[in-house]
Image (cartoon, rainbow, N blue to C red):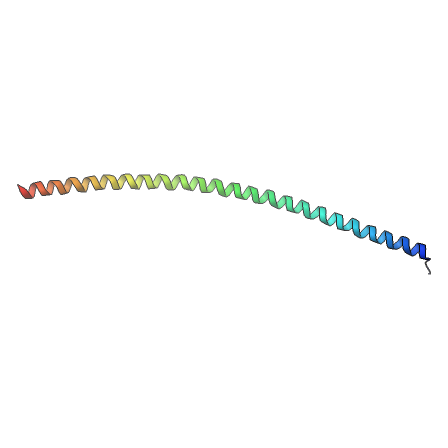
Length: 90
């Protein structure tokens, strides 16, 4: 089967058009996958940020409780030391 030069040119052009079309489709598919991944990452980042915010609130609460406990313990120790000194001097 012999092809003329015009037929050969047409086949080459069709092949090139198909290759370009497949390249465009591949690029579009990659764009869709990129956008999907970006949405997933943004969602994960938002969830992580919310979890860290909750954790910070809990840590702050516990630190405040510890600080208050330490303050009370210090006051009790100062009172006990004062009482001990009074009893010792008496």
